[in-house]
Amino acid sequence: MSVLPTSFGGVFKIKDKDRESLATRSLVKNQSVYGEKVFDIEDYSYRLWSTRRSKLAAAIKKGLHELPIQLGSHVLYLGAASGTTVSHISDIVGEEGVVYAVEFSPISARDLVFLAESRSNIIPIVDDARRPTNYTSIVTGSIDVVYQDVAQPDQARILFDNIRTFCSLGAWAMIAIKARSIDSVSETRQVFDREVGSLQESGLDVIERVNLTPYERDHEMVLLRVTEDL
Image (cartoon, rainbow, N blue to C red; front, side, top):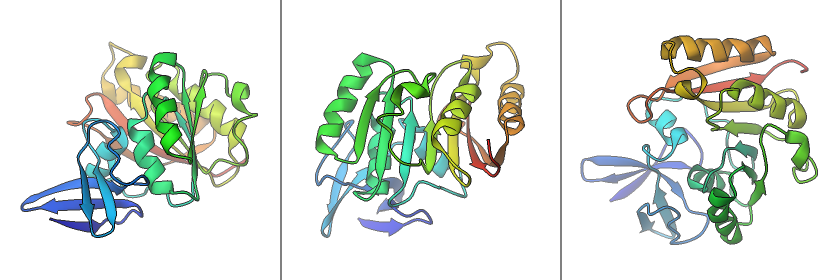
């Protein structure tokens, strides 16, 4: 078994015979967050990153070219759920970074809060992502990346409202668009194009789009950047 770097800092490949799996170097040694396998290699623990459990892992596996989430990044995560992807982002940004993790459901947030007890760079926020002004007192400083995975019909508007509240020129955003939460009738490509068009009209530049099939059906990951004052 060997560990190989990828083009993204903090993201690795674990190679075991003919099989390669994505992984992150765990911020907490020997910690498994959602039942994923953990391997100790040399002086570090590496957590396998499931493409079936994380849309960000699926996007990387499908060939994402640019990942703005890096060591030291300040990330606002909307739709954190129980913290599966949040935990891997926590690994990537390291102790120099921070992940503000917003989750509306108190039930899902219980696991998120428990996870944050072992990781000082995760700040859980149990609140409604539609109302970013509710948590302006908790999110301190400028946000480098807004990451959104919210299954709501107004996904584009939720993302834009949070970007406008917390980001400045040059910031990044990543949104996992779930077509069937927006429109259950139209072709998925039409739904994706409509949501992306809405974000462009708001003043965001679309950098990259990655369809997540077969790992996540009817989902597309979109990478955007703030290139003008909003």
